[in-house]
Image 1: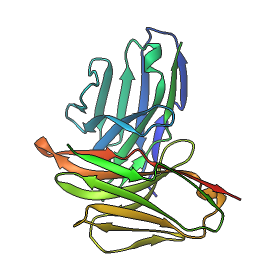
Image 2 (image 1 turned 180 degrees about the vertical axis):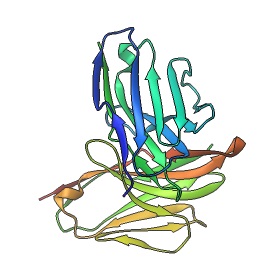
Image 3 (image 1 turned 90 degrees about the horizontal axis):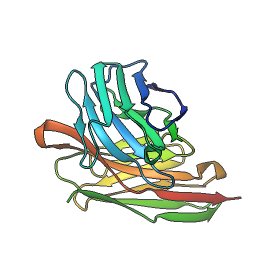
Length: 114
Length: 114
């Protein structure tokens, strides 16, 4: 099956620093990538939809200046959490859409901001 | 308001039991309904349903969609402890500006006891 690689799997950083998370589709071209956030024992919360070559569409309540999304190619999207604070600590997951529109997920990134 | 509702939220069964998980939706511009299994990290894809009445099967798992009554069920027969997970339902649609979007249910937490 299709593979989506997400890196890093875990990051611990100090408050005020920025963290970049990468999401790559390894064996297919992903025209659309989605970024989610998940708190413990809760469902996935869509943060933004990223289409290759265009600006990401953010969900209501998600600060676009804080969560910078770049989808520069058909195989790579990045999420940068700028000036991270403890309340940004969460599990972030990306997913990519293949040509048959199935979604495949990355393995997730656990962010802990101290 | 678009929404996806899963039931039950939590279920505990014994090995060998058969379980039925429900997913109802109210979504405009429906394209497909997706089932995922989430264990410790990122969800893994189970089924994508687009047409009513056509059952999809994968081993002990099966799923069917009813687009008239706006729901889907996921059946697991002869459950095993390895089936213990959160099962997520999502509806894929097209919203304003031809943007693709997923709406997720809260999931059903299934625990299979030996």
